[in-house]
Image (cartoon, rainbow, N blue to C red):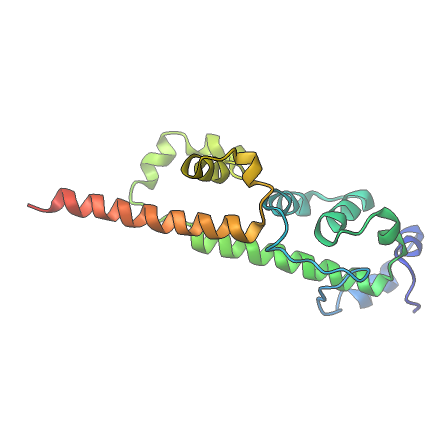
Length: 181
C-alpha cells in the first residue's frame, strides 16, 4: 500500500484497503506542517467545528473543517499524504470530543429548579446554545457578543467557567440567606 496523496485517495473507486489500515493510526496533531490549537482558535470556529463534525458528508465539508482547524487550504489539503490526513482527522475528532466532555462537566447545572426551567420552555433556547453564553458574557463585560466569538476559545471558556462558579455561589448564598433567621 502506497502513501498516496489525499487527492489520489479521493479519486479511488474502492478505499477499503486504505481505510482498514489507516483507521488504526494513532492521532497526531500535524497536518501539512501545521498544528491545531483549540485554545487559540476563535470560539465561534470551535463551536462551528463541533456542530459540523457529525454532519459532514462530502470532501468539501471535510476540507473546510481542516481549513478551520489546521489552516490548510484546498490545494494543501489535496496534496497532503493520506497517512497524515487519517492521523490528523483522528486528532481533530478527539479534540472536539474532549471539548464537548469538558464543557458538559464544567458548565453543567445542578439546579433543583431544572424542572421549572424546562416547563418555562428551555428547549426553545437549544438552537441558540452557541451564542447564549456569549450574550451573557457580553452583558457582563459590556461587549458585543459576536466580537467575543472571535476571541480565543480558551479565554472565553475560562470566563464561562468562572461566571458559572460565581453564579452558583451567589445562588447558594441567596438560598442560605432566605433560610437564616
